[in-house]
Image (tube, rainbow, N blue to C red; front, side, top):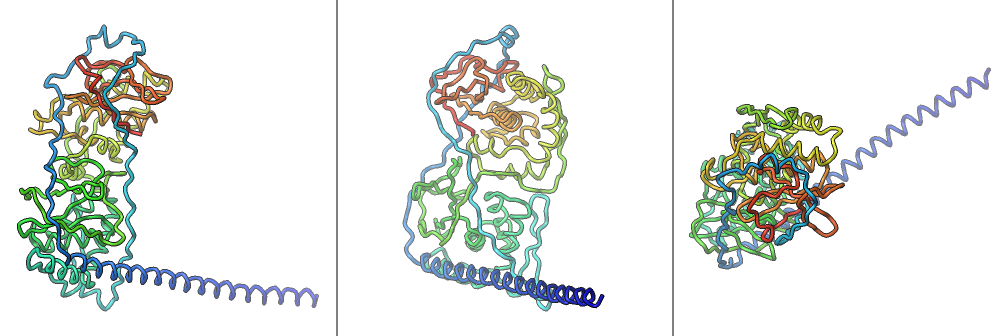
Length: 491
């Protein structure tokens, strides 16, 4: 019995020592983790301080005069009358027939550069009552941007190299750290793409400076962009500062300058010249900038007008949907760009939740040709047709959600929407097919081809035209010159 009690006591003592050891180990691990995190923060602060000091010196050097390439006008497409396939043609089985086409534009799935994380500066309880909050309205949200007392506007005396360099030193002296942290926190919370962050920092800069385009707003926005890792270039024209942004995808209606093989676009509509003085200096550690979107921003949902879209041939393929007005407004501010960017951007979560269950049910258990015909008839007959010029007065391809929102859509809008549905509901590779004056799609079926098709390496892409009303897959719209067709692969 005595030995048993001694054993219990030994176990209890060991357990106590073990618990104390574990607690001590936990405290030590937490302390080391905190120390490691603080060390990383300090190292990053040191890097930024050095980078900003170097950049301010670069800004002093003479900016070079450059001639901008003129803005490119979007290709004009769409016949004013939408062709309808006669029933005897639309329903007739088609034998596979290879088509000779003009060219191939390989388009790998775009990658959006990863931006560095920036820790939000801590505010002590004593300082908290002194922190000012500047409300910024942004597509249905109100973001309160924090400012420390005395965070005055940095005035740029003129657009000379010395004035810009002096202004940068003031921007980097710590007064804007809370503003920067809140901009980055907003980007992450709302899941903004690079273009979304550009628009948000523009809104913040204009709200803070109480002005639209001034040298002060541009300098502040340049600081908020570079510190978050984005690649930009500063320029001036007629004593006015401008920002240029790189893009691998074409941006229409914006003059550009090619630097190191990449086109940098000047996006301000108030610019009317053709020549700029450009600062070639790169901010240390810059990551990139892209107008591609991997996901839609998380704006509050405000229902717009409801619209019903229903296939005439397959009545089970029908939905009624009200798009998010905040998202539509965001798309209104998006630069005009190539069709593949809009296709890769997919649909919003709300649109997918409404659309995809119905369409999945409609194609469930069907062979791939029948499933593709159900989806193409849904797009052909479930949406009213008008050209961009008729609806907007200018060329404007639509994002998928915009096609669900606006009363009309045309050939490129239908092709973008159909390419999204086929890729995401059927898991197939798609190509956008550009004929002079028209846009269609082509699909790489697993068991195809069906009807007219293009040979692309070892793959065969069947023509699928969502604007040729009533036409099954494999039918090319009349009067299309395949010899001039250009394929853009969406993979």
